[in-house]
Amino acid sequence: MLNQAFTLAHTHESGIRRGVLQLGHGPVETPAFMPIATVGAVKALTMQQVAALKPSIILANTYHLSLRPGLEVISAAGGLHRFMGWDKNLLTDSGGFQIFSLAKLVERDLDGVSFRSHIDGSLVRMTPERSMEVQTVLNPDIAMSFDWFPGFPAKESEVEESVKHTSAWASRSKQAFRGDGLLFGIVQGGMFPEWRERSAAELSAMDFPGYAVGGLAVGESFTERERILQTTTPFLPQHKPRYAMGVGLPEDILSAVRAGIDLFDCVIPTREGRHGKIYTGGMLNDDLTRVEYHTINISSSAYRLDMSPLDPKCECSVCTTGVTRAYTRHLFTIDEPAAFTITSVHNLYFYLSLMQRIRDRTEQAH
RNA sequence: GGGCGGAUACCAAAGUGGCCAACUGGGGCAGACUGUAAAUCUGCUGGCUUUACGCCUUCGGUGGUUCGAAUCCACCUCCGCCCA
Image (tube, rainbow, N blue to C red; front, side, top):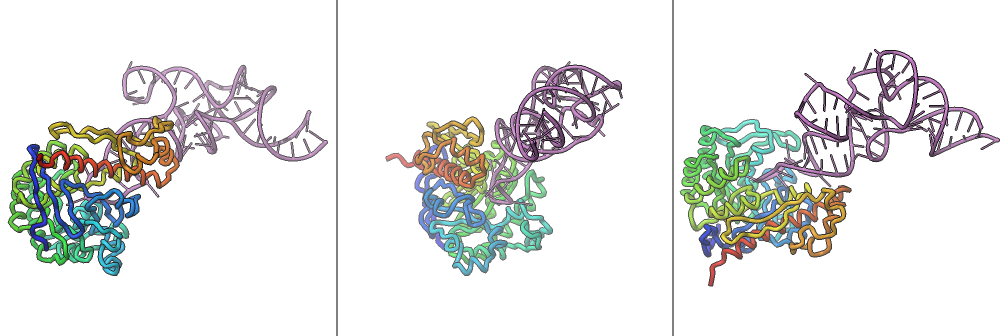
């Protein structure tokens, strides 16, 4: 396992950290956003289309991939990179959150979780050891420890239980992981700063090469989320990368980056893109406290005759090659899958260039 | 000229005496979506208003039957098919 993978080049007065995370498939300039390829594909895009967007790292999921196609297939391919045809970095989520969010939970005990598959209802057992076994085969550049998300809203007793199990499972995850990449710990603690602090402290003591803040962007307010991040990051090691799982909207990312977060992933650009919501603008104000952007619903008849690009100021491969609002609207109207490709490419470009802008604006002045 | 079938809201299409401002699709409009069971889900879609088990105007047109008509009757208009 790499040890000095993360170089924190500079911390901006805003609190934003500018760094580089060296991984097995190239450097990740941080702050960075990871497009989501849960099932081994960024929905609506080919890997070539993803590659053209130049993300340095994307995310895939242990839970989904272990159910389908299963480890036999990915193992036969020689790991997830080869299976997907992806030569940049990969992060795999551990499955802890998915079991909560989509599987039918059967039993949760100290050892692990039993649940019913969302695909065929079959009984599946997941433990820290099993998650690590799967992730070892997937062999990502970053694997995530198996955590216990308490749900939202969660009572303090549930949060306490979640923090204790998450720490114990993080330790077991670390023991069991055999992959080539880095294994990150995940902080829980609900909306209770004192439990966030305790979770962060316990995980920090385990000396992971990176840390995620989990259990956010699950229904809490912007203010709560900001407060939790601000009270959590001080208890994480300065020189290790920090990842806010599932965050978020552009303003959430800006707020989180100011709280000292380095990595993000979120379904918003792709999912909302497939639902016709297009992100435009994305400029940062002078003191990096606000991101100016708008969204439009492209399937609205307001764009029936609008022959301008999705965002006239955007330089993505869609907006610069003659794709118009009217045409995209038309594709949505007739349920043409190319519509989802167009909006996914555009929205991902929006997110990736927002991160680029944040990085550029926080470069050390010479 | 004769026979038969049809005309319902933006479109398509149910409804054949009261529970009908009218099923359902589509289209339109609005909204949701934050570690993706999500090309998904929700609401609205005649008008008005105190948005209400409220009032008004609607089911090709006119007139009629009836306590009551999108639904029954007469005539008319238009459309389709068939026979001359």
